[in-house]
Length: 192
Ligand code: CO
Image (tube, rainbow, N blue to C red; front, side, top):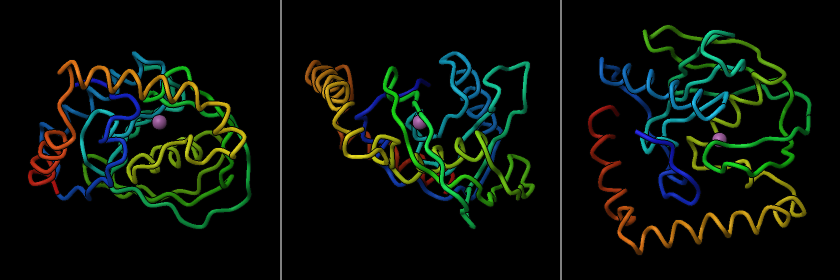
């Protein structure tokens, strides 16, 4: 398992509702935490590791021995309040940063790995992370939410990621889009 980078097609995939949690999925979540910490991240969505499932892991502290680890399954955001602009980055776009405007406070509801409901009003960094990760599950990247000026500023970096992806695709280092979708459908059939 590894983190896929923009413009990998799974990052644009609308992830499917998880209906079943098994030991393998729990193992996958543990591995996602490892990958997230390794990359110095605070959140990682399943489609960032090439899985089409509506779940993400996060720990706002960004360290395994600090903060609190959460696995959120089938997350829903409601009651957005306020508006705040903050700089964001993404493990699927390493080195790219930009300001994103988002609601400051939200009500967040999801299920944990053991089927418990989590429902809380969140604000600050926690609210921002869950909104960023939930966007991933809908195929949305933080750069999509930047201002036109912001998008222009990161365009050269995105171009470089696109060029690199094309090159690896042509060299046969990556499966083509059809093969990627075929694999996602198989995983969906298992868990969704
Ligand atoms: Co991200």
